[in-house]
Image (cartoon, rainbow over all chains, first blue to last red; front, side):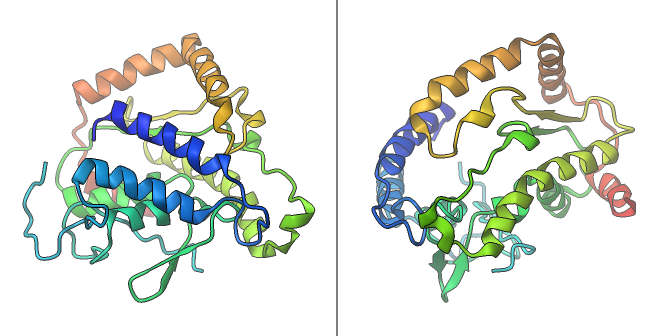
Length: 65
Length: 200
């Protein structure tokens, strides 16, 4: 993901996540479920799989660009 | 929680890679700022809170990691970008609903702005004899009025940042940053620098 795309995604994330504050902010003021949903959607857009691992297990020291 | 031992979510192989972690879990864990989002558990129920608690300024962590990976290479430069001047990163007094926040979390939030500048001072000392190698950019005015979650004030952030960058001293520093990135001239290796650091 290039920097400009990342900024666009981040701006979208901030609007979505911080617009929805919780009614009873016991364990954090904002919905962690919303944050997860927006992050997963971005990961899905970019990698094609919302559950994509950070680093595939068993990969040797190869350069993944 | 133990904020003294940071976990690094790496996108490259390492002896200490946190295996089996998904991209969204890493993103979620690094944004688990207390008072904002509940913490997340990854893998065998290991709880994570945002690194801001212990490593709001990660320069030291970055140097240690670079030393592990690139010991013998000459150091290029280290550019640190702050989110607003330390003493003005304001933490609003908790409202009555937030009084349930554990006091250790509140104390940690207070500590993080001081932690930030302390690390900057350490870095300045460490790089004192290396000219044009360590840089810190930090918007000094205006950010105190903007809370972490106030996305609708993004235009204000942009305006304050533009003002900051127009200052002569900052403009000159930016030129030095660009030159340091493009034409690195340091002879000292990361390992040598880190050894000096351990004497601090």
